[in-house]
Each structure stands twice: as C-alpha cells, then as structure tokens.
Length: 171
Image 1 (tube, rainbow, N blue to C red):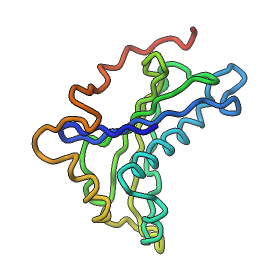
Image 2 (image 1 turned 180 degrees about the horizontal axis):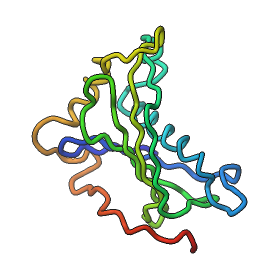
Image 3 (image 1 turned 120 degrees about the vertical axis):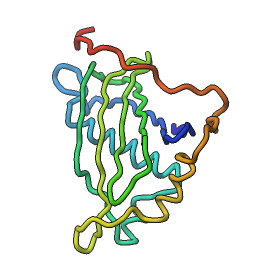
C-alpha cells in the first residue's frame, strides 16, 4: 500500500511491509541488516508511485548508489508486525545527491526506527557523479512549489508528531 502526501515543500510516501519469519533473529527481533532493505523497498516504491523507475534510469545510463546510510533503532520490530515505512524528501535534490529520510512505525503507531540514505546520481559507464536527471526533477518539483497544498488523500491529512523518547527494547 502506498500513499503519497503533498505538503508544503516536502514529499512523503508511506508503504507497508509485513515482517517475515526469515527476517528475524534468535531474539525474535528484525535483524538489523534488514532495515537497509526496508529503506530500499520504500524508496524504490515511492519513486515508482511518482512514475520514476530505477530500471528506466539505468537504461538512461544513470545509477543511484548509496553514499551514506544511517539507522537509529528505538524499539524492535518483530515477526508478523505490519510496518509502515514513511519516506520523506524534505528538499528538492540539488546537484547529484538526494537525501531520503525514513520512519518505521508498527500498527500501534510507535516509532521503531528512523534513518536516512544519501543517494548519489552517477553515470553507469564511469561511476562519476552526474546532475539529477531532468525527468526526476520534473516529477519532484510540484512537491516543492511555493505555497501550501492539501494532501491528494484529502484535507487534514497529518504528518507524524514529534518522535517519542528512546524506549527500552523490552515489551
């Protein structure tokens, strides 16, 4: 499920993933290495919702490797949890980089994990940075236009409140 929200100078999209048994460790928590994959799924699906496909970018000779990855774990996700992953672009990409921010919440709305990836647009032929493709900029630009807009999902659609203080991993 993907829901894109238009906000003043910001793009965000929500996707849902159910935790599979194979993604958990012996303690029953989602193994920490899986969060990078969750971020990737959310990022690629949010771009797909905008009409931007990684496969098409690669066909144009443009790749998007991860330049930085940061993850902060607040509470564990567990087997069979339905996770909502929110992807946020707080500013329109400039130059060759774009920063994707993430929040992962459980069905109770508790903030479990937050993080970001800094992606770099590069030429697939030589690996050197290239400017953000015009096709990507054109799809993102309306979300960063001056003035406020309502969510395409209806008026009054709110963003998450302030993050709760870190909590113990016990339940």
